[in-house]
Amino acid sequence: MAGKDKGTENHIKETAKAVFFKEGRFNATTQEIADAAGVNRTLLHYYFRSREILLEKVLLEGQEVFRKKMNEHALTGLSFKEKISQLIDVWMDRVKEFPYLDSYLASQIHNTNLWENLKMNDKEQRKNIADFFAELQEEMAAGRVAKMEPMQFLLNFISMVSYPVIMRPLMENSFFNSKKAYVQAMSERKEAILSTLFR
Image (cartoon, rainbow, N blue to C red):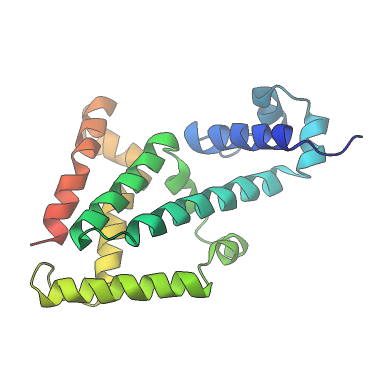
């Protein structure tokens, strides 16, 4: 077989992302992904030896893009509140594009190999978090954010953004009378989060 073509490889990856994280078909077979991509299964296996390898590759690449976008907004010269506002926008944009991604991550909570690969362990990332916490402590000292351990603020922020996304089926069935009502509530989510985090 001829050498691998990047265009074909990227097309398969983009199709897999759509199947897994846009449609929520986490158990889709390589045949189903190949059919969606318009290629034969042999070709898919040539590029990605198994469904698991393909899934992990698109997940890791997607998380890296997301992480870079979050870092870019966290390191801007905007006010701290404006940064948090933009971080929420980045997260919500990802949710709109891939509504089942956070649910998949939650479903893999005991997959130690996956989390080892997703771990943020580079020096630059640790420095970014330290800088973020230093700026947060300035906000606390100025009275714009309630005083707490910086990690608690970060946990609050992550939970308020991600929990309604991860629990969408339960939320829609238990608290909303339609998917439209849930989507409307999520469109108002940013302002609710900002008013909770900031004084």
